[in-house]
Length: 234
Image (cartoon, rainbow, N blue to C red; front, side, top):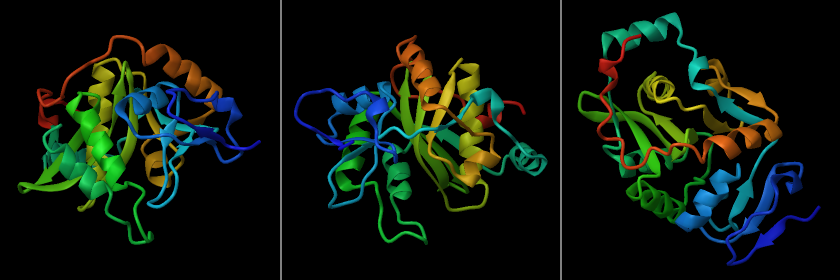
C-alpha cells in the first residue's frame, strides 16, 4: 500500500493503513496543532535532515506502564545516595540540544532544527516537558516528551554520566504513577528500556488506551513546581 502524502489539511489516515515498517504518512508540517493531533492518534514524526517528514505508528508498540518500572538493587543504592539532582522543565532547550547530538554509531541526528523549534514551542505551550538530571551543577542526563491527558509520549533521552538517563526515567515513572498516568510511550524496542520494564503491546491495544486517556483530565502548564526526586522515597 502506498504511503499517503499529507497536505495542509489537519488530518491523518488510520494507523492500520501504515506500511509494514509502521509508516503512516509523509509530508505535512510540524505545527503544534498537527503534532498534538498526531500523538492523540498514536503517531509520531521521525525522519532525517533532507528527507520529507515521515509519520510512524509501529506495530507492536513499545511502552512502559509507570507501575512496572524496574529498579535494580544497584540502581536503588545509587538513587538513595542522591548522587544526582533531578528537576523538571528547568532546561528544556538544553535537554533537547543534548538529545540531538549524534551517538557514536550515528552519522547524523533525527532531531532536525525544525523539529527542535517545534518541540520548544510545545514546551512553551505546556505540552512538552523535560526531566533534567544534574551532577555537580552540570546537566548530566535527561529526557523529554509530550504529555497529553494521562499519557506521556517519550521522545528521546541522553546520558553523559553512567545511570543519569536511568535516573531520569525512574524519576518520571514514579511521579507519573503518583499522578495516575497510565502509560509512557517508548515507541520502538531498545534493550536499555526493556531492562527498565518496557514491553511491546499490539498497536490496537495502544490506540484503544490513548483514545481514552489522552482526553482525560489534562495536566496543563510547566512542571517546574514538581518537587525534586530527593523528596520521593524508594
